[in-house]
Image 1 (cartoon, rainbow, N blue to C red):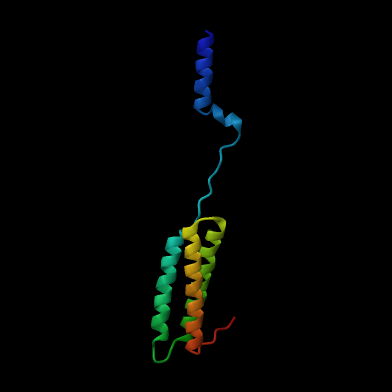
Image 2: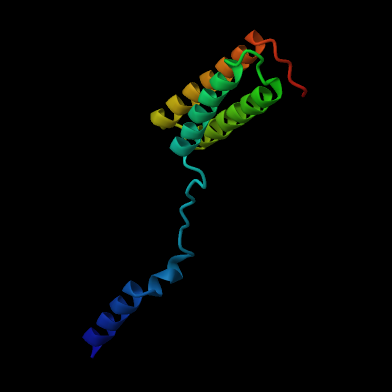
Length: 116
């Protein structure tokens, strides 16, 4: 009889009774995919090239694009900061920061001034 009690206890522990040890751990995943954000940033950088290549650059559109490019950089770097030690994410942050800086430089070269 004692053997059945032990088997029953083991089955209980394996089928949910283990929750007595504490609440289940929750793994928090990122809501945003850094690769997707990087893809958006690259596309916006290409759009910026197009806008600035016009004989009369559309400075308003260029300012909006640069703002979005740099905002995406902040989001990518924020994800990298939350995953310290992840070299791939650190590299994405560095690359995205470079795209932001480059976009700002191109804006200045085009003599576009953006309002804060």
